[in-house]
Length: 355
Image (cartoon, rainbow, N blue to C red; front, top):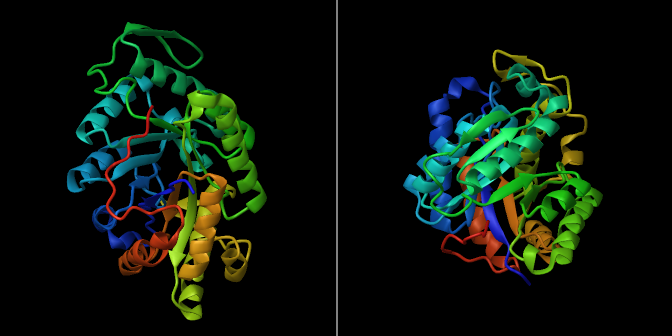
């Protein structure tokens, strides 16, 4: 069975704003240091602004901090929201971050997911696809070519050269966040790594997502051999029925807030996402999430490895206290991942993913 790497999502969920942003980020750093010590291949974090969920408005800055305190971890921005940035300055920021992380940066990019956030930052959701597509073209050109000019819909500029130039040709590997299977096929054909998720566990969608990637990679032959598929899932190791019920209650509360932004009305009060009830019950949600005992998680991860997932991005912190997050990180590394057939490596070196 092929090797499947394991990534820890550092989720800056902040339901109780009295906790303090300094403690939130210190908790995330402590999780990253622990993941490095326990042998996870990478950590990931997501760019979001203006709301107290997945709260990380400076992902490249955070990547540099994590790299300074760890030794082996690859560091994924999963994802940076390209339509919110000017590629002429963002390209230089990427190059500096890649340099200061000693080449451990993996640049995950996406179009944006929360209408509340995008609208207030001047990029309505109905414009994000077109602006993302052009931004990605501009970014890759600026990273690969020494002098670039542009005449498009969102970018028009005379010849310029981003300085400094990338240490490694073309800059860090770029990973696209894509949910739609047809979009996965198109992005894979263009030579990009893929990050996807079946959201709260839609198995049919998951199989179509993986099939779109693996079939396209096979069609590409040697040109596609280096491409990787990362799958993001909420996960937590539980020890008893009562423990599982408590964690599912926390996940249920989290998804009520998340869905308010992702699919719902986007009701936010002074940066605090309004607490709306999730559509299903905690028990129904438990059928869709990886919140269970070690044996059940081992079986689920083996299934992902068998169908060709290259990296599992495990989001273990959804508004839980730090002690619960630390406990489940230990449980994953000690009781679950070593028993997955996809050969967990306890202390790996940072694996280079070709651009």
